[in-house]
Length: 416
Image (cartoon, rainbow, N blue to C red):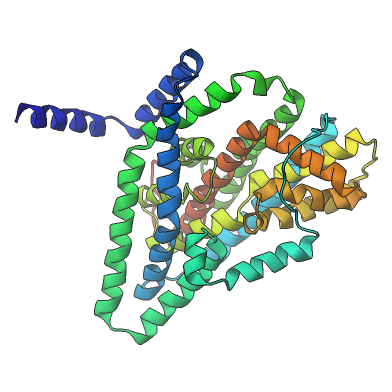
């Protein structure tokens, strides 16, 4: 009995501490262990289990939430949904403009990697769009198994509408209860995030140490600097213009509760459940965010647009290719379109670099070496990119809904 009481007390104390504080403790402990005991590889299992569990449940959660949301059909997605899509596209375009501007102000040359295993990249923007369409009509079971979120969104929408129009209310209620059950599983997984992040931080520190910050330092500085400008200046400016109020309480909360987790998981898909939970805490309509958050993980790719533009211009600088302003603007549009389709391409944003490099006539073998450099710095670049992408999904989903509230005369939350 005493053991059960002790365990209950420990669990109770653990749950009473803020998740953010627990995550910070996990980061600190993982860093210390990675520096002091780099050979304790068994600690990496915690990170693998955490990310694996999130990646496993996320496709099921998205399908359940989207289908149940449309099945009960109590929401008006029209105006809010249009607003959030506009915000996604505008922010991604602005991100590519920031990246191009930063690359002009701080031109970077890189040392190409000579060896790297890289899968095939898309041959052109047409192939990117084709990949998106093919993924949209892929087998629904296969889409869930492979975490193909384009296919999941399409089939969940079709399934939800079919259930709404051709089944009884009790059947719709069953789908809602299933979605609630899956959401509870997600909450249990998120509650164990500090242990998972401990393992992830340990792996990064024990494997790379601090050397990643010195090699390719200037390139990383331009990439990370552009992403920070986007997150702390441009995105808040979009929110401020839309809502006409101080955007930073919302932005900083999204950073704490979404961006930090996404930084360590390095997966927008794995962070979808985290974003869903944050939207619920913000009091947003589940019918809205259950669709906009998975969609944002697919097309709201500010970090990807920055990566594509910066890496492409770094390749052009290295080869002595002069880039004029009109061509740079075309690169912005190309990076935006490519970023929106990044999730439909194996390898994500890095494998879309050759597509952008083709704009300057850079040979594919050189472009693929740029991709290899991207993989080398990926431990930082991909983490920052994912944090920006994921946190922005919640920022703009909340902005779209709060904008609608304001137009309807409803009171916005005083605190976020």
